[in-house]
Amino acid sequence: MDAIGFQLTEEQALLRESARRFSAAEIAPHAATFDRSGEFPDAIIRRGYQTGLVNMIVPEALGGGGLGNVEVALVVEELARGCAGITTSMVANDLALTPIWVAGTTEQQRQFITPVIQQQQFASFCLSEPAAGSDVAGLRTRLEKVDGGYRLTGNKQWITNGGKASQYTVFATIDPAQRHRGITCVVVPADAEGVSHGPHEDKLGQRASNTTTVSFDNVFVPESARVGNEGEGFRIAMRTLDITRPLTAAIAVGIAARALECATGYALERKQFGQAIAEFQGIQFLLADAATDIEAARLLTLHAARMADAGVGNSMHSSMAKRFAADCAMKVTTDAVQVYGGYGYTKDYPVEKLMRDAKLLQIYEGTSQIQRLVIARELLA
Ligand code: COS
Image (tube, rainbow, N blue to C red; front, side):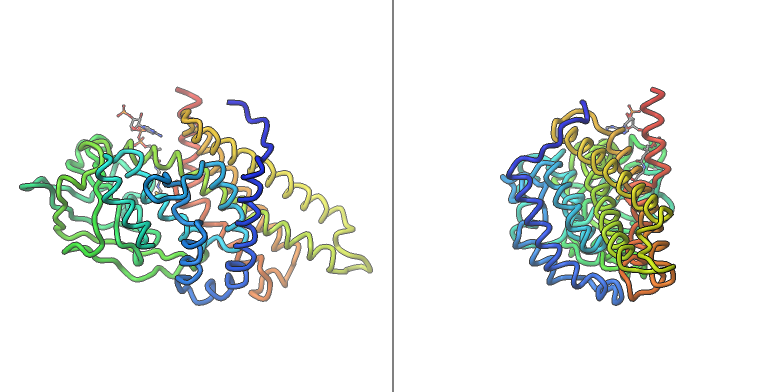
């Protein structure tokens, strides 16, 4: 697909505008507070739920927003300008519920998606493990066949909203020796016997997003809660990430755009050597590069999102968008701190938080190195 032609429709522009207003009024004013406390922004996310800013990508028939990937990316960029941590927790349901609407039966979609949304609950995507982050095929959480279903045992790590979710979408293996061919997807209620979660991780950035371990100790999972066939879980997880990585890229674009906004404003205000520092080419070039990189990251993100909407294979472009936007956010936020100088290194100004928040974009939903691997494999295939 060509990457040209991003004239927003009137509806898309209105949607972006309303997300921008929500972010400015409901998220941005509280971002520093939640960053300091690491508390979960329950009330903000409830308002997001009421405004239709949670479960945006889930089909309307199942109670979701039914928005396209492009529309969700536009909204997510705006939310992330306010706070990436809060945004990550707001979009976690999209990640957790996507395997079910992508690969579940109609009955499973009704059973595992609609009630979560109607009751304004959280769901979590449980893929990573203490010893299996990048190497998904090496995961060790076991599903053992028993009468009527399975017994699930293992530990999951870095689970967004792990301590808040009422339901987990879990990837486990029926036989570790089979690597990716053994991985199977099941849906597990958080109150099932044997399910527990750890404390909220004390993270460097995105401190408002809830991150915990989740453990399964001999949990009974009925066969009806298995999404797809045994051994199809790896593909389901990868298809899900193809859909959601452009949305994660949009978080990176939002962080970078906010950092540029801050740096530009500060450069115009701050005087040194008798003039605004924005008068110096050293600062101008830095801002010009940031603006260029952000525009490129946004276009790549929307292109990957548009490919997802069109149903064409977008693994490579999703990874390109995620890699480019994450690295862009890291660079732009680091440069924004540089523009602020010593002040930027303090919590009195917003840019140090943006820099801490950006770092996670190079790690979660696949590190920047894993994205390069996906891109290279497709190039060389
Ligand atoms: N869609 C559908 N199928 C896919 C796919 C995709 N996007 N990507 C891979 N597959 C298929 C392959 O075609 C292959 O099929 P076969 O069974 O016919 O061989 C199979 O899945 C295995 O793929 P591959 O050989 O590429 O698997 P690897 O173990 O080498 O690993 C990576 C693939 C590294 C790309 C994968 O493990 C990954 O994305 N890791 C990062 C995970 C991540 O993002 N974690 C963050 C936590 S989630 S928030």
